[in-house]
Length: 267
Ligand code: DGL
Image 1 (tube, rainbow, N blue to C red):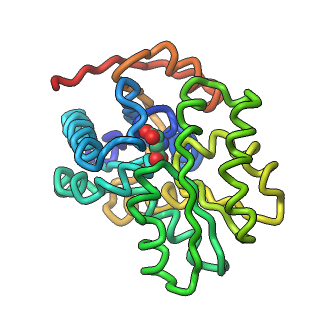
Image 2 (cartoon, helix red, strand yellow; image 1 turned 90 degrees about the horizontal axis):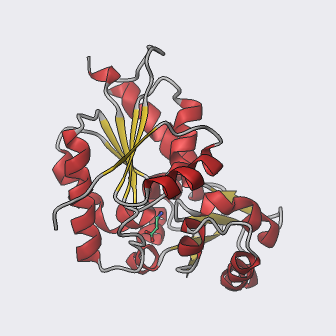
Image 3 (cartoon, rainbow, N blue to C red; image 1 turned 180 degrees about the vertical axis):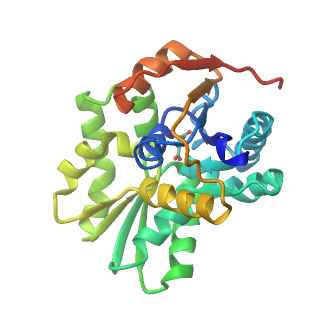
């Protein structure tokens, strides 16, 4: 019965938990396997070849766990390794955050800001995907490489994070954007700080919402949506520091993370 199989969700670290949160809330019957590559984060400052290699290793690991769908809960991987992931996944459906974020930002706006890691911004994946849907939208991009390390350290209440965000966002605010795409799955974890800097007149677009909707549609289409609420399990696998992952993860998910396992890859 494929519907009972878990959905594999992965990111370079804890950022993908912002996607997991939506999946748990909106698809509560689904079994989940989350993978965070804590040992090798950040991906966003690495080369395309390295990110693709890491993504392939993770996808092979997830496929071994017998999953029914793969969610790339990382913009950086979606930007530079989507094809590599799809190739390995074969018949397993792959859902990514950039297609979702592009869809949400292509309707109703003339000028959209996108923030993300160096790799995501340099790939131009967002403007390319948005323009395929609506060539009229002006997309202004800003790389924010220092935000991820601060969040991974759990420093979300630290003044340094606010100062860094203000500095990064200034360039976008000067251009009068109407919406801001959180093009890194770590950023929704600090959306309150971002919203307080940009003000309420600019919409925040969190691609996780449409990612979850796309996932639901694909599960329905493939007749693999889990209709039973028996024995639901959420398992988390990390490549380093499971305790730290648990501490910061529970802070974000507001729920105990019972099953956390350490995984090591051969290099
Ligand atoms: N969470 C990842 C993303 O959405 C980036 C973190 C990293 O640099 O590894 O892009």
